[in-house]
Amino acid sequence: MPNLDTIEYANRITCIDTHYQRPGLAACYLVESEGEAVFIDTGTSHSVPHLLDLLEAKGIAPSQVKYVIPTHVHLDHAGGSGELMRRLPHASLVIHPYGAKHMIDPSKLIAGATAVYGEAEFEKQFGRLVPVDETRVIEAPDQTCIRFGERELLILDTPGHARHHFCVYDAESQAFFTGDTFGLSYREFDNENGQFIMPPTTPTQFDPETWLATLRKLTAFSPQRIYLTHYGEIGNPLEMANKLSQGIEDFAAIARASSAAPGPQRVAEIRARLNAWMMQGLEAHGCRLEAETIDELMSMDLTLDAQGLDAWLTRLEQA
Image (cartoon, rainbow, N blue to C red; front, side, top):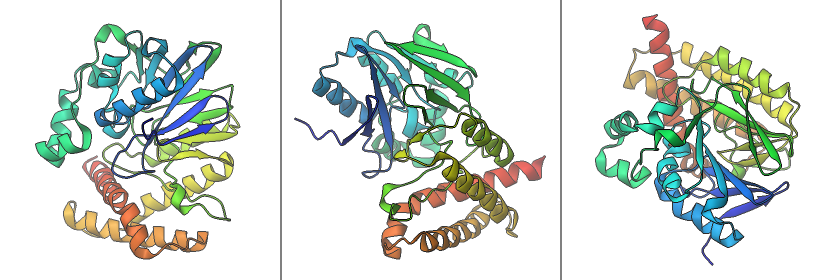
């Protein structure tokens, strides 16, 4: 049997490591009900064989998967959508209305990511982005209900991290699948004091006030647990939402405090302050990992966060 790197949670929810960057960084989810299934997020095109291996291991035919539901179109969440849809003959893709065009024609996603990574690194990180047939795409605005088996999922528009982001509420588990909206919380930082959480402010649509309103919208459901793409299940949603809200406010304040000009110098200054914020927070959390280990785990996230905050400040300055 292949190495599936999965976690089986209650209520027929399976967390699948998408093998992006490192183990335990990015996940997607398989949710089952009465002979039907859905995938929530997909990872990259490189992730698709692992998802198909899981179906085979569970005895689920590809034709039994009814929906593929990326929370938003960032490539670590949705880059594998087209390839996965190609392998699931009866599935429909459920996507935010603002993201649908990028799944049907991923050329702008490809061009933007290639400009950042270069062609060779883009292929290494994300593989090939496959267009999704427009006739198989369902645009899901706020309050859309998706039914499969005897289960119902509620789609909620959740901007703040990205304008094209939604979260998925599962009434059976009283839980949200939140993509990046509920932050990132890596299991390496778990200890007797609970779980450490922080916001991903990756380029290019960070909007702190909108994000805070989104978190209030989610906690109004009184969810019992949260399923993160980065990474896995967390509990105590209200407590974690309060910590994440404080992190969003802190990140915005760190960005506003920068005196550097827009661009690489400001990104470097913001990144250094984010690193100090994180290290102070992890120390207070009781983290016992060495600084070198923390840097290895968080280096990419902090760089992307700093770039996103610089982009946000630039938008404010231009406005």
